[in-house]
Every structure is written in C-alpha cells, then in structure tokens.
Image (cartoon, rainbow, N blue to C red):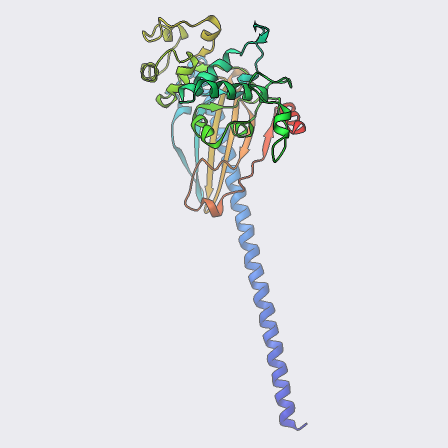
Length: 362
C-alpha cells in the first residue's frame, strides 16, 4: 500500500472517530437537557403542591376567624364564601373555593339505621326518604328512585342484608369486573359511580347537590348557605311538599348575613303550613362543622389540584379529614392536559378505620 493510500485510510479513520464523538456528545447533551427539563418539572410540581397546601392553611385560619366572629353561625357573607379567589405567587398563582358541606346531601346519611318497623320490614331512615325525594324532584320516576335509594343504602350500610330493591355482594360479584359492596361510609362522592344503577347520567344530575362527609352519617342542611341552584335539595328535605319555584323563593328570602336563629326560618310563609315532624325539623340548621376546599396552584406550566375536607374542632380550629389530589373539574387550564399532575387520586385520610375497612372489602 502506497503512502497516499495510507493517508486516505487514516483520514477516513479520523473522520469516523470524529463522527462517533459528535454522536456521543449529541446524545449526552440531549439526555442532559431532558434530565434538566424533568428536574425543572418536578421542582415546579413540588412548588405547586406546597402552594396548594398553603391555600389549605389559609382556609383554616379564615374559617376559624369567621366562626369566632359569628359565634358559630355560618352564612354566605363570610370571608370563606368568597368566590373565585386568586392569589398571585412567585412564578404562578393560587386559587381556592370553599363550600359548606352542610349545603349538600350527605350520601353517608343513608347508612343510618331506623329502629321503627313497617309491616315487619325496617323503615327507610329519614335521610333515605329525602334522598328518594331528591331523585324524584330531579325528574326520575318513583319506582326508579325507590330502587336507587335502596341500592345506595345497601352499599353504605354496615350489614349484608338485601333491602327490598337493593343489592349486596352477590349482585356486584356477578358483574364482568366483580367487586363487593363497600358496606361502609364513603370518603368521596365519586364513589357513587360504583353503586349499581348510578350511571354517568344520574351522577351528572346528582353531582352538584350531593357530597360524602367522611365518617359522618347525618344529613343536616344549613339554610344560610344554600344557593338558588340548590332549590331541588330544599324541596327534597320537605319531601317535595313545595315546588321548585317556592324553594327558590325561600332561598332568596334568606338574609344576606343569614338567620341568627333557626326559628326565623320556620316563620317563612311558604313553609308555615307544611307537615314536618320533629325529626325532619331537626335536620335544618344554621351552622356547620364540615367544609370542602377545592384548591389549585400553578407554577409556570405546572398545575396541581387538590380537594380537602375540613372539620371544625375545639375552639373553632379546623382539622383536615381527607385530601384528594388531581381533581380535574377544578382550575381548568388550556395546558392542563399536558402539564397537570397525575389524575390518579391519592388519599391521606385521618379516618383510617373506614378507609382500611373499605379497601379490605373490595
């Protein structure tokens, strides 16, 4: 091989080596950039998470101050009830919305046991009758409402005994994807979708009017915090003895600062002549122990969403009962689909007995 040919081979070898070095360097640079972007995203999500927790802490302080100032009375003119609150934050913003969980129907109330009997069969508890009335008021026929009421009652009550139109484990185990009835209280209203008969359409109509208070099986309605849109709920509490228009009128007549005594509510001319027994009367209140915070935080393009259930403790201090991460119905953003935290929900629940029991059953 002549000198010129040797120089040509050496040149080709050098070119190949340089090309390999360039390719390796390019790959290393691309991986470093990807790693930096991932680190930045994680940092932003982490910051958004702490921003959301700060909204929770602020809400606890505001609620305590409002309850202290009003001697426990809860109404819509208090600071916690402000809508669409937005706080600017470094590289982003924090939003929050608080609602009274005594201004919705507590699904767990159907787990209450009635001591009285009717022709040898246990009577439906008052809350179950009110829930059935709510379904009827939303346009469902009487039989379908009765069936769904019994089905929900069987799902949340502690026993495994079928109600006349209900469903227990055998019904759920026969599905294509088998599971069991929870037979314990719900922690979130979205669990209603697991109950037989509660289709997406039914849930869409019920969703704005219902809630699930963790560890609580009482249905109380705070008349001071009802909105006009919740008129069907007020109708149901009176077993549909009033019309939708009358319910809207009653809500519209609530003073801006709320009733100071529940007796003032019963003086409304639209309800004076109604047949309401003592148990039903006791389910109307002007205070509340439970509140729902929907919080969202944005840091650059990272968005974090959270729901917290807060319970009033001693001295009007607020305790966190549950947190749900990833609520897609709150704080929507054009970039939400690509930048939100995972929509799968993680739950940190102080009421661990109910959660563990529910998971074991399933």
